[in-house]
Length: 562
Image 1 (tube, rainbow, N blue to C red):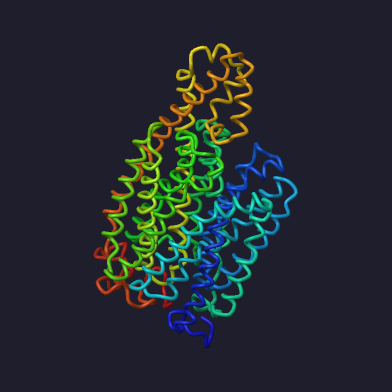
Image 2 (cartoon, rainbow, N blue to C red; image 1 turned 90 degrees about the horizontal axis):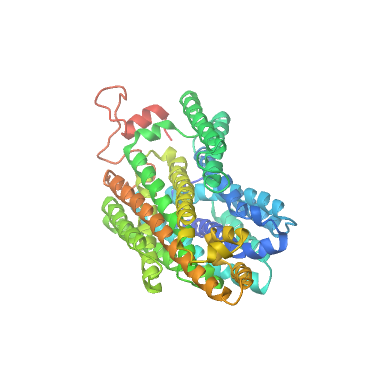
């Protein structure tokens, strides 16, 4: 820590409010950007072309943000949060301008990848800053507040993005980040003290960072491409997974030998960290699975207007906002988190069970109810597992521990989307032809039949118009066959998504089961306490009495005082 700089938790109430305001501003426009862009994508493709690679406008950001989030968290532990959070905002803001002036789809994909670097630096530090400002006994309400801000931004993002796209241009959805970013930078520059994290000279684990990236990137590419670009059993996907596994083994070996590991492996000796990471992994699968496939259900199965595509996630995000805020207040008042995490698991299981029962005849109101329940379960759980980890591990690991939970959530989401998507596509491919009206397979051209196997066609009015025009060439009964075909497609898609949501139910049950093993510790009342009262440091980590999860073991491994 720099000489003369007061620790963040000793700042005045006004100074803490400034730091919180600047951090929340950055989190707000970062979260909003994730949903704003998805609304503008059809217009982007219409102007820049590149329909075959348009998904990479979203995927490139996910790849880079997931890769950088751990590095940002660890480096902020060493050098302090402010430089990395502000640099993340600056990168995000500058790359937003580049995205807004992109002349082709390739440029946009590259600039979105750069944007992901900034977003990863911000997400890797936002929740850690709360840990610098407040002790665990007070963090719950602020963690919940940040979760509510994230959810609120996700709610208004699609509507805001749709309005800008319709009334201005799709480029404005990127330019709108600039004023938010500038305001956040000004507030943080004024209110956030410049501080170092850990005392003394520290060496950066460049080798570990490179090997970790070499393990993450092939895994993410495999999850993105599997079942879409290449079959799961293809040499390309298997090769990527094998390369990722090999690099993971290499990463573990490198970290064991590193003086300053980028991801200290001793964190995995802590049972709370391991359990929380597993919960994050499973809930990430459920969260991203619901976010990805619920719009497809609402529009493709229930027939919601595609023009309202930006609105279908609002009920879920309302649940996230309410759950985050209420759980934060509850844990601050009660001083306990385990029962709340378990309760969140129960709520998530109930929500996923309701979703697994949905079909073509599901009332719109029931689908909205289910999304609210899912959102509430996620909103309660996600801030609390961050809090549990921060409370359990030594303060020196605050940044990397918090970003690790976010990392596992992101990995879970990537795996969930890939597996759920493959399950859906396989079901549609295997069952669609048998469900089509009699005479369609004999009379409809092969290229038109092939287009029916893509359920995304149900979300695009223009695609449906082209499809209807194709059926119109079949004669007087073409219109009837088109309507019957669309009805059959909706039924098959509904059955496929029911299977997807049932798999989500299994994942939710797994998250609930794992949460039962979460250890409850008293919330510390001081930011820099290394161990809660009932877990005093153990002098000799090598004795048989030393439990691997005790902070004493971590203390001995890490060495020295913070």
